[in-house]
Length: 559
Image 1 (cartoon, rainbow, N blue to C red):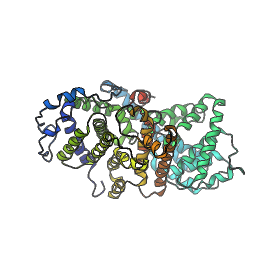
Image 2: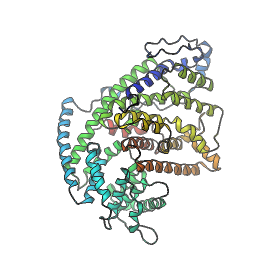
Image 3: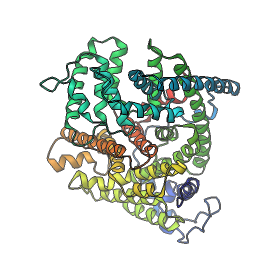
Image 4: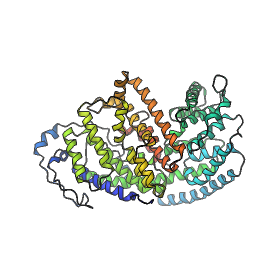
């Protein structure tokens, strides 16, 4: 652990201790009586189990409690499923581990042999395959050496548009600032590409999503290739048509890695050019990780059931599996099992507190609860910052406040998304990779972190706006945009999409600067990818049954 950084376990333990205490004493009726709380703060090191809950006089609030009607949420989609779900037996698991170890070394030899080859197109395809089948994390150094070789070779591709586009995509994805001028030789006098090859157009569509501000040429490339691909879909054979539609919905750079891994292994299996060792290793690795994830969910389900037996807030979304998926989208590798579990607990608490403020408390109760959280905190903590933002949103809601601009709205709503806090804890969980300077940079809300927050905040608002405005709810960025510009909701959504695209450009720009470890930047980018996925069509966290198919493929069904 870098000098001066508090260990991840210590930070998370303090946060969980603090919030557990308040969840336990903030059951529906108890929340209404916080004015009666004993102001004596918790003794340092005290826990919810070692601290006596204050005796509260509830009589003056009974009528209010009876009249309160929180907004209903869809019920829990999974229940206790993972208490008894075992993807495989212990002997099957050990056999998979043995086979995976053999395949791992065969694939490593294949990669090393490829490094000695002069076939750069093959190397590009290999790196892309390793990443999309989900096994690239085993070969970080080997892949970096391949990328370094690709970067040093600039003029060896001739007129191969597909290879040029894939090289541009992979190098920019890994922080190499390659110029978009590599595409100029493929354009005609009107600035259009002459190619009608589907694979080339797919590669060309993915590449510009690694663009930064000022690269208008790449903006035009997105528009051109999107139009071309849309016109070709109905004439393609089903497998290729599905790939085109999937790419048009979400370009490769913005996909959640484990979701893409599950999808692409099935695609790769049908390719005539597949490598059997890579395919089999990818399957074994996926199933091994799935088994680990199920063990994590079993432990989390036991913990959550125990907590709910003491306080079961009916006003909140019950989403233990969905939150685990959220964190899995950021940290999926096996060595991060403990951080995944603890971050799942923290984000679940954030969700509970969000619902407590947003869906249940009045302004007065919000004042009392926020003051109580601050009074009883022994460690300050990131959670207090989040609670203050939730409290400010309650004031906006009850005062019917409408920000003058979307930017003014984002000053509060980005912070209340808790993205910066999650990213900081993720950074800490990575151990020696993270320095004190990295954390100070994250807490300064640079454009990179702001970009991640915008992807989640505005994406959430765009799919939740109609549903939430049917109840007493804080004004969204969608509403703010309609008022700021005097436009319709449809027009506002188009303007907000532009802001999201600019946020992605900020994310890419920071990755190309290489001022911070690419490991850190990749994990933060993963959070943006996961939020983009969750809010692609609707609020799949709130309307959790829409996630059931995806989660079943990740947690239940072996490949």
